Image: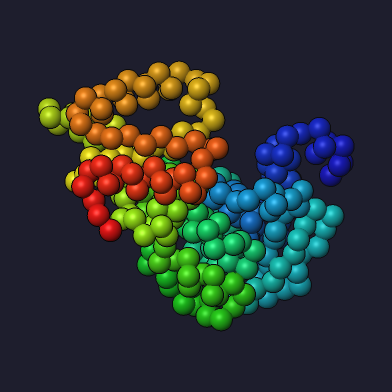
Length: 259
């Protein structure tokens, strides 16, 4: 594969080109694994793992080799097809990622696997069973620490980060992506993180917020929530963990919550 072709493409295009090209020549019993399988499935990874190479595993054979390949071997593995590519199943991929991700990064990856938007990749039972089978393998301690902190219904890594900051500050943990209805029972909003009884919603606003038509919808949605008595905490990229703890703590205190 000409490197010049890859160098002219964007990072995501490079990844797609490599995977498509390798899939066409992949022998029976080989599959994408680790960070490569995670990217194919849409699991968030830190930039340091987005290499110009693909992770490929062979069962009961020599590790795959090649200019753009990081080869692995396994005694056994469960695989599936995803977007036309053979990959290791998500719960086993999480075990592989445990050796290369930090704790919070692994929690974010697991949150994505448990979320049903845009598609469910694994259940908590699947993750726990895979972790038990992983035993004392590489990253086992990180895996054991991460799984209890994973949650369903989380739709972005930044939501994971905000939730973890809140919980580790000793504040009550909010629910993720909960529906908020008006008095007529019609949907007003789906809040990123929600304290339903205290009527507090925490929204993480990504970079798109000021740059596309959805921002207008967000403004209208916020106004409706305020009129219904909800407090809204808006968090953006520049906010630190200390900022999040202070803002959420102040909002909880104003609604009567006490440590």
